Length: 140
Figure 1 (cartoon, rainbow, N blue to C red):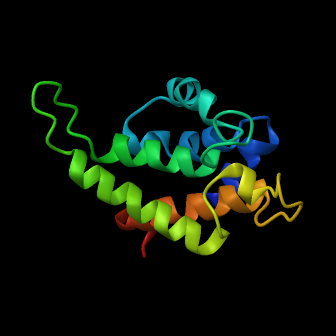
Figure 2 (tube, rainbow, N blue to C red):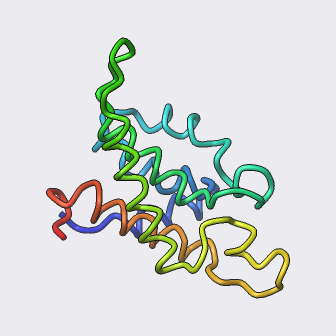
Figure 3 (cartoon, one colour):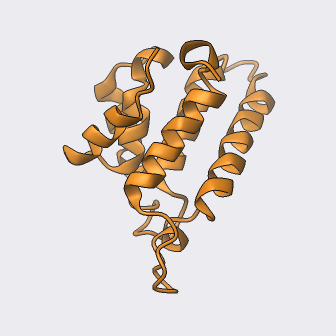
C-alpha cells in the first residue's frame, strides 16, 4: 500500500492539529472512526500545553500504538509492556530524525533555532507509524 504521509499533511492543511493529522489518517487500521479519534487527540496538539510538552505528531503516533496493540481488557491489562515497547521505539526513531521530542525544542521557542517544522514532524511521525506499527500494510 502507498504511504499515507501526504494524507497527514492534507489534514494539517485543513486545520487538524499535528496529533490529529497523524492519528486520524490511520483510523481505519486501528478500528476507530475518524471523528472519535479526532476528538480524542484534540488536546494533544501544540505540544500539550502551548508548545511545552511532547510534539503532537509524536503523541498521535503513540496513541496509535495503544489502539493497535492494547488488548483492551479492563480486568487483566496485560498488553502494556508491549505497547510501551512500541511507543519507545516510535519515540526513539522520532528523536533520531527530528533532534528532540518536545514541541518547544523542535520549534526553537527558547533558542530561536527551529530544529524541525510541523510538516516535517508530521511526515516523520507518520513514516515511523507505517514502519513500526503497520509494516505488514506499508512494507518496511
